[in-house]
Image: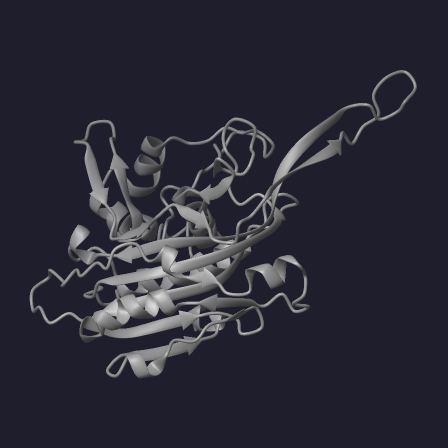
Length: 319
């Protein structure tokens, strides 16, 4: 078991969706939007994270690293059937109705918490240490509706007549806030959980690849705050929402296709101004991005005593 997380973190996470649907609504699966302004929920990202952990970290035979909130099909149904086990069944079969076993062996519960109401047990609610905000598009994405045809012929003349439509965004760059607050449940979040979260966030999102749903991770900024407390509680210095403090510097050039490499250039002057005021409370800033996809540069002169690290996404992978 690794050490417990003893510092407060804030972060910004950017994704990009080109000719795809970053998060469909429940009415017609159109990209979620307010009056055309594209947004996403935290649940679509959490699903990516849980799927990645389920496929790469979970050991169902040893009942370790179980992703509790990942949907599981009933054993007796066909693969094509959409019939799933209930939380109560999973809790009983895997964790033997022992809530402590669930906490010890479910990284997604230690990360995000959850609401639990099991048979023959008291209801429990855990406000998870890791929280993700709704995402907001910062690239003025436009929603495009496409006409599509059915894959089969219809009618006596064997011609394809059935048509439909789907909605996608032309190019949405979604910005999220994330926070890591161990005070939400002191002693619950482990360092290995935080490492797994960041790996799953980046690479789990990249795995989301279907014709309509395709999203790529572009930037992860993680700000680690100092903690000089000796007890379990950490100094939780929240600077407010940060996701709106990053801007696309070459937005118009990219939309006009004048930039042949389509590199995203980030303007973070507003973020610098915010962070520099609190630099005495910041231990380090880690910036993960692929230099072939995105350009970003903090002004080091504004941060005399803060460690700033530019890291390739491969550094998120467990060794």
